[in-house]
Image (cartoon, rainbow, N blue to C red; front, side, top):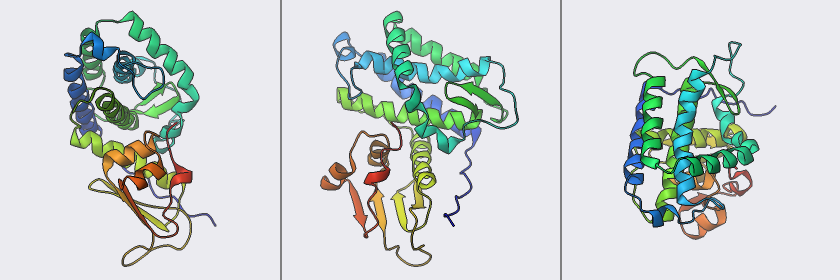
Length: 267
């Protein structure tokens, strides 16, 4: 019998909304003072320059208000559960890239673009109510609360991309970083259910994964531990498992504590 999957983690709708706005504000403030030279610099995202990366960040937030403006999809349940989301966007990568490049070319005034994205989000997701309504997203219908969690992943990951490209230190909102870390850790446990390996990402997440002898008491025989940003880079393919081990950014003990075959979680 395959290992049972655990009940999905619950996220507070309004706390996640606050985290999304806080992280977006950090990026907005940094973007406002970028020079043309900085905007033209390359990033680790293929052919994208910083300008295109920044346009993608704005587009990611605007997707919430665009989805809220659409009619609610039929049916009581979403087509895409939160833990299915990390693997889903890869199938739409070409279309996303085309949309980003068109937006970057059409909207050179990035300050106004960010102001519009922020205002649209704040209007579409009021600071009250619940996040139970369904949204029509590019990958299929999702609960609003779940989709907001995915926005923390987009914002944290691409803040890290900006920092890497420009040598900046744009801050990471703690709640946004926590939500991003937890979703990607839970996605690993969902992809490889089991209890033989414990993955620790202090202070935000601890999950058990991979089938085999289940740990119940004492120190687990197979343990992986790393920090939030390293975990996020591993989960999104920004860092390779072997490189992280070599650089001592990850500790892995036990014969089963090798996650190389399971990473990255996002394409």
